[in-house]
Image 1 (tube, rainbow, N blue to C red):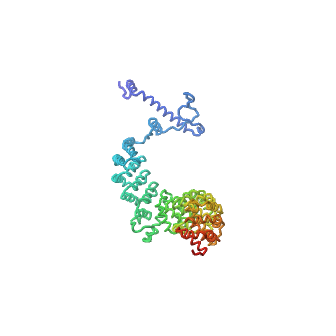
Image 2 (tube, one colour):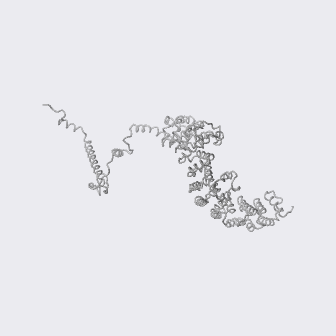
Image 3 (cartoon, helix red, strand yellow):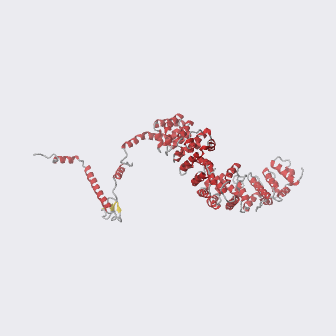
Length: 631
């Protein structure tokens, strides 16, 4: 009889069962049961969502209570959605190893990473020795040679990684010229791309700092044609700014600035002109197109990190100087909220001054509000404090100035009085543009803003600001008068507060007179180099006020004469500094002061006639003028 070939004999069935491993069979059954259970739970959860809305969600498996007893799942429970295959695969692999492997990641890539660990690990170990400050010169040379052998051909790759980027940087910093040339040769064609990356940009900075002039020039040339693009990039803008401000020559700086003027002028040589003003004088027909290009690039940079760099500040300052009123107003409106971020550079501070001088009252209001919270920091800036002085000169809304600027300024008087630039802000509030406290060049800069759209009388504006700060300054000076009178830096504040404050300053004068009336010795205030200067200036200021017909409440000169007797004055005349104080008293225009001093020192004329001390010689001449005697 014929036998069907598809039928399996009992012998074959038994042999097939024996071929399957006993360890695999339970696993296959378990997996199949789990798949069926998951499919069933999924169908229940998705069949009627409204029915299961208020039910408690529990996890898979049994819930244990107390010991090892397990309770069955509740019939009312709703299970979580089934886990997808990728998540199950990750969980399964994490039980075996700490590192999570994704299913889609090629195994070849992992093998390559494990193979490269050999030279990366060795390089890190050598770098730990190289980076130490106590590493000797011979050992450093040997270590660099070993590192060069390991990293040869992998410079760019190492510069991109967070854990190996410093290795290449350190090699370039301490390596010889040949090693620097080899490293730069590998990255020369990728300078523009490396600038844009978080870790590799530091290698380009090292090349600019420690490289040869030819290497620096090559890096700067790599920026040409895409300077504006790099400035808009978060990472690359720092590299371009470092090259421009710290390492580029004048010709290279101008070549970088040409990128803002448009593609038509990229061919011009820097020797033909030195500034935008010279360019417009030579090519007046290009003025409108150049300003249009600058406007477009600046607008694109306003909200970028590169706006804080001095290169952009220079372009902005030039644009505000040469643009017409309408274009300037548009640019001021565009940048007014970010001016607080550019005050740290000279060009940025001058650009801010232009915005304050030529802006509308609304622009000034926005600028002042943006300064709130940063007043103390602005006062400490070498150029930033100028913007506060410009606000004091031009802003008609003094109430806003008091709330946003002066209120914060008066709470930090101690810190401002110790700062060079903070002291200038306080002196300007008391006595603006005084030649005693400010240089002519400084006054000339602020005088450029006198032609503005302010409507309030400058004297009225100044008095409103002075009254706002007077009381706090008087209290602060009175509390520290004994220190300020001997401090070469803060003595100017003491003099201006006494001379210009609108509040009563009698408390400050009494403290000074207490020091004057003390017993005369080497540490007396008249013998002090700063103390005698303060007393002289107070006497001179009162004399000038009397001569100009200015009324004042407290007469320090008269109070000084009443507090000091003839014996003390004769002791003052015995030293050079004391003699100059007496000369100021003799020349004073305050009523009867000079005559009273001359009478007390009449007996000193013969004793001081033969003196060779400069102060005593001048004092004798003044005394003779009072008595009209010839000795």
